[in-house]
Length: 349
Length: 138
Image (cartoon, rainbow over all chains, first blue to last red; front, side):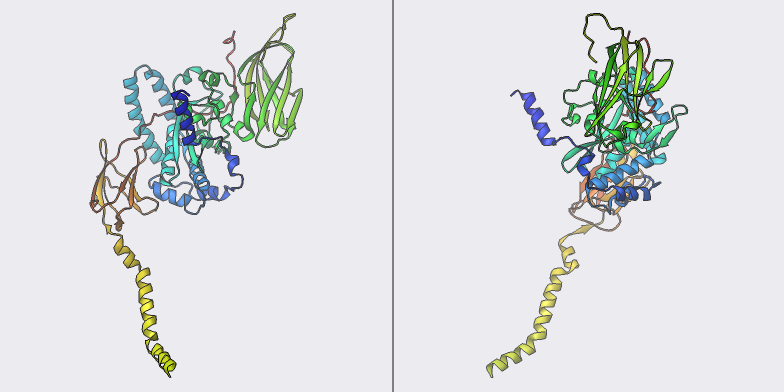
């Protein structure tokens, strides 16, 4: 056994990073934790120990205590678009000057924490930091994970350097993933205004799904789930949305956003569902760049939460194909459909 | 007769035995006696960052909600006594949390907090439908 493999195995054993998600706590009702967090809505961040005491004092388990902290942060701290835009602009400008970038980071860090403390507004790093700070006080092991986050509007050049932070929390000797930034709500794409809209799907999220649009800077934070995943694969992955985290456990196939197929090829979109759904609520949206239309899948197979949606691509062209469930965008792919050459096999998806 | 005498002695000594037992039990369970084993001290101090005094640092005993906040000059006086062996936590947003174990020499604490080594990263989720860039994949 080579040394690298030995240390990798040792790290895995020590960190006990086995597949962990919310299903591990099916018997726990988080209503009490949520109602306590709601009771302290609007509390300031001036006295963190008091806030932690108030949030956790009446709860029995660590997962509930963590839930109250996490839920409070997600429903009280706003995402600040102007801080995001400023940070993005400056980081892009200084990315080749490491000294100036470090100076900017040090200066901006102070602004981030001052804004968080006074206005309860922040960006990814601030969300992760405040959850970790509150967990530290509650003696819950929590760590900030830096890496890349990819959304439906992320440009390729935004992913040259890490652009996102989330957290990993250790509960009952297992590490779980949460993204408080994206769970808190979303920004209005027109005016940049933030709207609270708590998304429970990012709480102890299914790791396999999480890594479709999160790529940690350090591979140990793949939690032994996607160890073979490369950055290239992450870049090529389909687009998933906030609502995806409420509906799916994993997004199985195709595992690429861009797919080249021949005309009259039937695409198979495969997923593992979190809960059973009404298949009538499954829709596809086909967009050829100028026109977007809702189409009916040719066939839907649902077997023990394993969903397959079939659709025959009849015409050549470039299409964005979106899967919608309950009228929410779940996954998007691009299909380039080319004429079928005679006497040749179809290209794989 | 002998037995009767013994019983009589027992009757005489009974209140003394009960009182002794009571005093012994009280001595064992008396919190004052327990406290005398666990020495307590008053703790004062000052908290500084890399650029001077830090105002608003949360100072509390680990695992409790007993605590205080540092003043504008970084000074603090911990409310009440702190037991030797207790852990005093200094927590301030953006800084690395520091824990100090209280000893008999902890009457005045000069605490220095260092800034948390974080990279400020930001990514927003507009949750808009994806739109591919046409012609890029040609």
